[in-house]
Length: 220
Image (cartoon, rainbow, N blue to C red; front, side, top):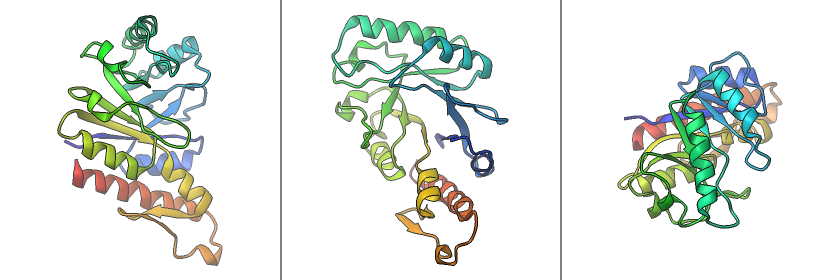
C-alpha cells in the first residue's frame, strides 16, 4: 500500500496547489500559517517548541498526523519519556497519529509499542543518532531529509517496520534555489534555465512531486 507523502508548505500557495494536484497531502509547522488547504500533518519547531500553541493549532486543524516535541538529545531519562507520552495523549484527542521523535539510542525501547515514531532523517541540520534496527516492529514516519535519503531509509526498514508516511520540502528548495527537479534518480537543472523563463521553479517543483511519488509507488 502506498505510504502517505506530505509536502510541508513553505507559505507559497502555488506550490501547495501543485503538491495537492500531484497527490500529496499537505502539512505545516504550528508556528507558521497553513493557508486555505486542509492540513494532514502538523509539525512543531523542535528548537523552540511551544506545546500549548501547538496543541491549540492541532485542535483547530485536526490533522491525521501531529508531532510531539522531540525527545532529548542530551540524555535518556524516564522523565523525558513520560513527558512525551503525556503530550502524545493530549494530541491524540485531535489527531489520528501522534508522532514521538526519539533522538538517542535506548529511547525507543522505553516507548509503548502502540506509539508511532517519527524518524528524523539525518541531514546537515541534525537528525536521529541511533541505529535503524531499533525501529523494528514500529510504525514509522520519515521526518524530512532528501528523497534519496528517505528512499534509503525505507529500503532498510521495509522488512522490519511499517513505514506509513514521509514528509519534506526538499523539492521546494531545489526548485526555488537552483531550478532543479528530481528525475527519479538524480537532481538535474531544467532545460530552459538559460533562457531566463519566469516562474520556472513551479514547473520544476511539479516534475519533482510527480517523479518522487512515482518512485515511491514503485518501491513501496
